[in-house]
Length: 289
Length: 116
Image 1 (cartoon, each protein chain N blue to C red):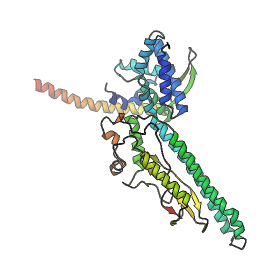
Image 2 (image 1 turned 180 degrees about the vertical axis):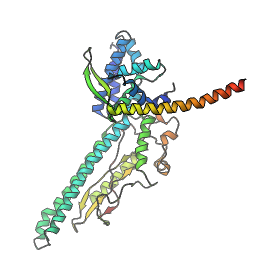
Image 3 (image 1 turned 30 degrees about the vertical axis):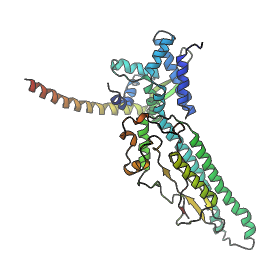
Image 4 (image 1 turned 90 degrees about the vertical axis):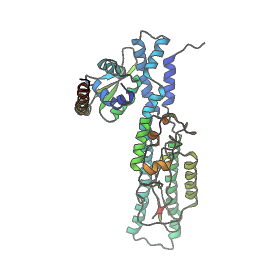
């Protein structure tokens, strides 16, 4: 028969609840372990009953994890988004620098143009693909981060606040300056790969009703006319996961918190909320040149 | 004390508990318990997210130490900003408390007059 070890079991549960942030999990578990053993000693010794009493006084592991989830989630999203935006911006600047270099050198297409384009244009293309791969890796990273399916009212309200701060127009997910990375005017072409990627993102976003702050980013030169395509930074609803009954539209219409408006919603769980998708990356429909 | 009211002032309470000097989580909760006369019924674990939040905001600093038992222990201390924030919150609380006392004082007087 296994000897009951309430403190050890509790720490295991806590580590599981905090596994959306391993570093935080290690730190908190270490602190909580010290706290619990201190409390056990204050109750007279490491008996099972004393351990149970100490845990009872400490509170549920899930309650504790909920106190961390919002801050941790937002930090991860910002980190991933910032890194991706930085990478995409670097690629964009490099490509623009190359175009500027051509202009400065007064480079005109010559009969040798085709020979040059044979390696110059692929660089463009591969740089763009690199940006997209980076975006997808970031997307995968963010999507696979796990968080508890249950989130406290305080935590959710901070997410709502951050979300509402950037949300401006109902039914229109795009809130950022559309020409953040782009020069002036539009170009409607989209490559097949990007079109497919966009559709996949859209489908994924809808089917999971997941959320996100969305980023990015890529810049593509059109092989035919060397016109760069830029993608807007977009944000899509973040709350659907936490409050499945209340829709994105409700949030968009009033920027009201469905969580705070619904009594008892703290314990509601969305069907897929086991795996909390923090964000998705979605390229813009509009492309600007 | 109602939990929601308490949670709204948890940061201030934690800062006040650390005003006496550096302490680890268990000591902080014991200090809060002692000073409040056991009036606060929050689970002990509630202070840890608050401690981490305050540290992230630069109001607390922390470092690992080793307890006599050999366990690792995180000790928190107020920073200069933390001291300033505590003074600020204390002043705000005193104004608020005085205002509420005034409101309730009038209520008591009115009730006493009604009884007489």
